Image (cartoon, rainbow, N blue to C red):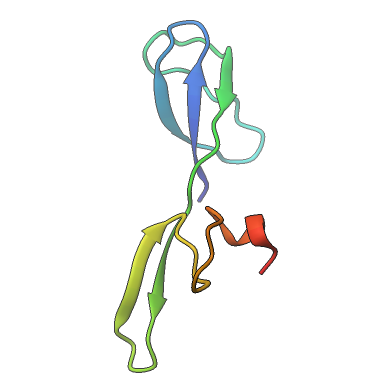
Length: 76
């Protein structure tokens, strides 16, 4: 289920919200719906050939020598 990060423009707080269908996010602090969805880094695990975790990261690149913050940045 998708959990999104939001910023409340009413009280200036950040929060996470589970969003199902057309559910409108509401700030848990002030109950305002004047909120913006924030950009979140996704987490992932890279596994080696033996199943061992090689890299655990949020936003790290799997390309060697790549300086982009995500694979979308360099097109690989």
